[in-house]
Image 1 (tube, one colour):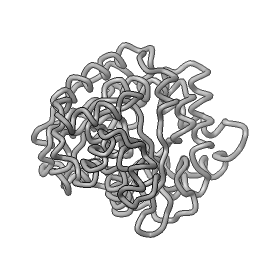
Image 2 (cartoon, rainbow, N blue to C red; image 1 turned 180 degrees about the vertical axis):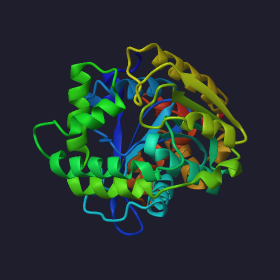
Image 3 (spheres, rainbow, N blue to C red; image 1 turned 30 degrees about the horizontal axis):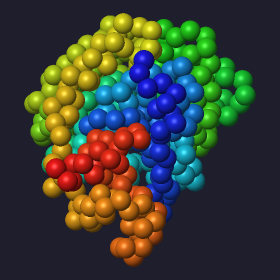
Image 4 (tube, rainbow, N blue to C red; image 1 turned 180 degrees about the horizontal axis):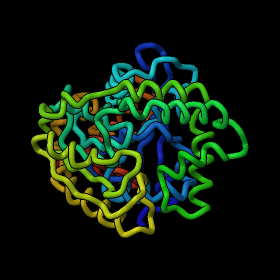
Length: 351
């Protein structure tokens, strides 16, 4: 399965601030073309590495791409004391995060309830998005009239059982997400819910997601798009076909699974991994160094002279932390990681 525990060691966690002051957490790991994941609301940048439900996503995607992911406001390592979970707010957060990463152009992976944000971003900023993968995705969370009683019951279960040690109520959601899971995987999903956020955020974000609808944007999505969807998905039934039909440049791959979150031991996961790797392959073309900023090239040239970070900082009257951040941005832009990243970046600027 590739990088395994090494990917976790190499994960870099950073923080930035949204324009309303909310702290947002993001991380990157792996190597290859940049892939920004707009994930579902259930995430925790650190906890996910221990998960038998999510770990294979991190390992395998890190083998084929430089993965950038983040916890949405109200979840994981991002700030929990928030009240605005609207689409506009989530899109603004994504725009802030993109600038914080230093990426100019990248692929997007919109997963589950994160897909509307990815779709809105790709529609608004097609020049930044090389291609887009939609997985278990939906463009709207609106409820039909006949679903209102069922949704009221779900919200009541969240309020009653989200924070309880006993996972009785949370297991209802787990069964919907991964009906094919074993007991260990079920228990991890039960616990992820309680670990990822508090009861109020779970309720408010769910209500906001059901008010989200970007369906009108679909015909205007101009980037190449790969839609991957389980054929028996209970969480987002029928959305895969609809997305592929309404996005002009989309291709649909149906996956033989009833899990909204594909598990590592099911055949559909191998199909998912292969399709994503092949789809991202055009982005693997070497990025020219003229995509780097003047400051980034200047720092690489000083590194080529043998200066360490402290000496570069002194020469340019910068802090060491700023120099380190420039190096990390260079690595991300050039698709480099690991111990040889510095030498490879220097070699590229001298070529």
